[in-house]
Length: 286
Ligand SMILES: O=C(O)CCC(=O)C(=O)O
Image (cartoon, helix red, strand yellow):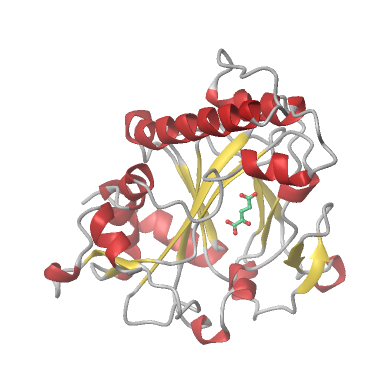
């Protein structure tokens, strides 16, 4: 097991965030990226069949194609057309590629080095396609606990933010307030962010602390905790900032999402409870 070293663990516990470089070889993200490419293609063909898209942009790379397609949809007044382009490309995607990333040994080794070998892949996770100059994907200051039930307050959660392209200040990387995980849960109000579509913390309620922009190269990960105050900055680039945010905790602790199952990703005491493949995961929802 590689996991984190003592210095990294001390920094993460003290500052509430940590950049860990070279965790995921790009080959281990390829299955997920190819699934996303297939979905982008399928959604584009559906839009073309409905007569709202004249060009499929097949030569555009992963980091640009969806943005070109969204710009080219002719009936922008009917949001159902543009919403359909994002179907299967955001939120809680349950596919072989997602399962492979969520159970990647390098990720679970990091988690194990922080909470031991009983590991739940938390039910709250997302895939995000953050398009250039798109207000609704700019996430205001918040704590992840502000989106969970309060019973998870004392659960030590390890939150991974994983880019699928190099994440930079220009394309909308994350920003954290160092040490803010030591603050209590701060009141979250609705209607924040430039799209007014997120819950978050108003500026006046932010604690002191250095605001640190966190570019993350492809293959690296950013760790935060569920009380770490963070946001994502606007994407001013010409391409999509694709990313995942995943969470892990001890299965014996409340998740704050108790009506939705997570899956056991690693267990020394109950190895038979581990979800070994996508089917095992999906079975939990039947
Ligand atoms: O990816 C983003 O833009 C925001 C992610 C986030 O806020 C989170 O993971 O909690």
